[in-house]
Length: 493
Image 1 (cartoon, rainbow, N blue to C red):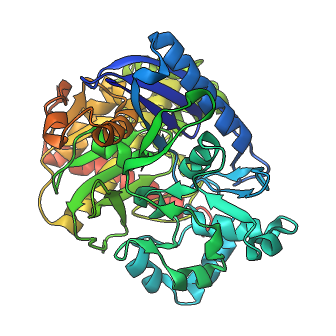
Image 2 (image 1 turned 180 degrees about the vertical axis):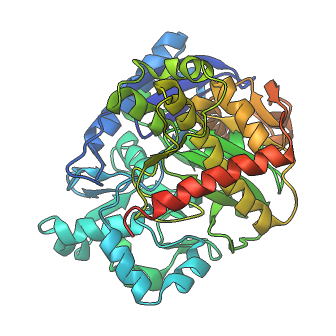
């Protein structure tokens, strides 16, 4: 059995990819999922659609590959993190729609926790900051706002899970309620030093421990799937960004990757010591392949590729996302235009949920091409802010940046990123590193690969981008960006 099936359940779609033992893509299938906006600042997904779309693309990918399920050594699962689902243990039915990681409805409760002086306690235990981004406040909201939910939870009748837990529950017909440390560490309920759920934090958030999944290693046999994937071992789990870190083979401290997806996520492997950031980054679990946890520093940008979607769906500047590079390249620079896409506040290192999107530097000569280019460049500027914070926390210089995600195919963006950072940007041959990381974790458990050394030999560069500007120009560009950010942050002040 030399094939691995990777299930990649993301914010806007469900994908399934079949990999062979060389780490190459055999075939794939993908299906978009519906975004539900009940009111401004809220975003939901339908849990049943998440499950059915992921099941359907898995079946489709296997069929397209022309292989039998008996030829698949394992299933690796990677998922959008923090998105919160609560369901009835007996019926398996969700009590409400999933609350997506981008949703901001729990801001008042976050403010209440901060005012209660709990920020330091939570940071020390979880490595996180108090923000609606994470799952804990979402669980609390569901218990407080869905009729009868808290009483059911107190009786042990409800289960919570991020998307990985929900899919494994469905794949095993309810026999396995599990998660791994990468996903657990995104909840505000998991003690990253102890490697387990924290009773004190559960009391702070008012969440019964009976709701929580069992925490299992990221790499290791969990259960055999049922349904259409019957008999295939589920043997790897990781949240999407940690999975990409592993897929990029950033296995040594100091190695860094950035994923350009709906948001941007910069992660640095920091080894087996969970150093807490002093520059408003978060510390998260990178992986657990044996008994020890590996940690990462992470900076999260809420709007990256979503900015390009806004150009398409909100402004009508482009008809498809693939048009943005050509339009942006039709002008040599933005002519001083900056776009700060703070559609739902700003993530790291600002953590300002009151910030709002802004376009600055507009003149009578500004065209849609300038706005398109500035929207692309915003991804690179936000990443540069994260990299600057990361260098201060880790002290050693960043030597290179490995990149992946949909927007990493954009050569204009990648070159501008190298220019802003002043280091090489490396794009691998296989850009689907999120799914690849999950496949690697499952394959290591199943014996398709023996160790990470074998996997490292498979990682190949497709294109290398070298910096092409000097320090003076770099500082000038960043100064302009920081002035635009200052204005975005003052909009609601």
